[in-house]
Image 1 (tube, rainbow, N blue to C red):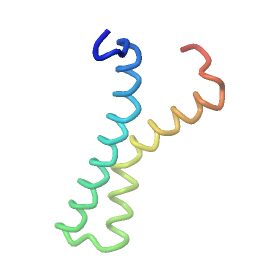
Image 2 (cartoon, one colour; image 1 turned 90 degrees about the vertical axis):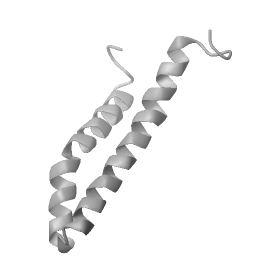
Image 3 (cartoon, rainbow, N blue to C red; image 1 turned 120 degrees about the vertical axis):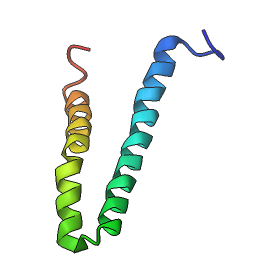
Length: 73
């Protein structure tokens, strides 16, 4: 117990909000990269698509687990 929370609760909070904040920061980095390279609209789209596929996959995994009722942990 730390500050009245169990290790599982702290880990769940970190996974939910910590990784979410990290993902938003990565989107900021991608947009900053597009702006500094003067990529334009299509270039920005390609950067977001190419570099954001991993983020989309992570979010999709969470949605699928939620829809299936968290089968298997």
